[in-house]
Structure formats: C-alpha cells, structure tokens
Image (cartoon, rainbow, N blue to C red):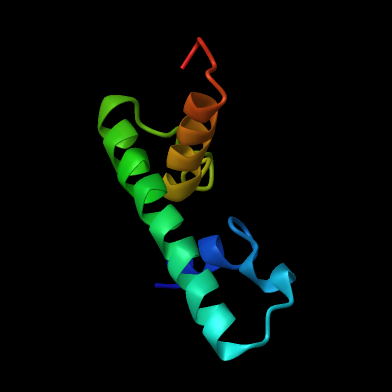
Length: 83
C-alpha cells in the first residue's frame, strides 16, 4: 500500500504539487491519476515476466514496477523505434 501512495504522490505522478484544493476537482484528478497508474502497473508486471528488473546490492529492485511500465509506455507514446 505504501508503494502505491508513494508512486502516486512524490516519486511518480507528483499529485501533491497540483495545488488543487476543491474536493470535486481533487476527486476527478485522483480518478484520472489512478486510471493512468493502473496501465503503468500492468505493463510493468508484464515486462517483469519478460525481462526482470535488476536487483541491486541491497536486495531491492532498481526501479518499481510502476516506473518500469511508465517508462515503456512513455517511450511507446514517443514512437521510440527501439521500444
């Protein structure tokens, strides 16, 4: 659960920097972020089965599954021929 909130807040989508305070707009924004977060996670899990993320010396992965998926999706949207 903590990893989910961390990827939505500070490390990923940076939801805290928006400055939105109205409850209805905040609900909409949170919904859109979750709709964007889910495909990133799904693609990250799928990529993990194909090419696992490198495990660093301290035993943790080099990046989260959400970050792994979001980088792949970002490259696909930019029409990167290598991806």
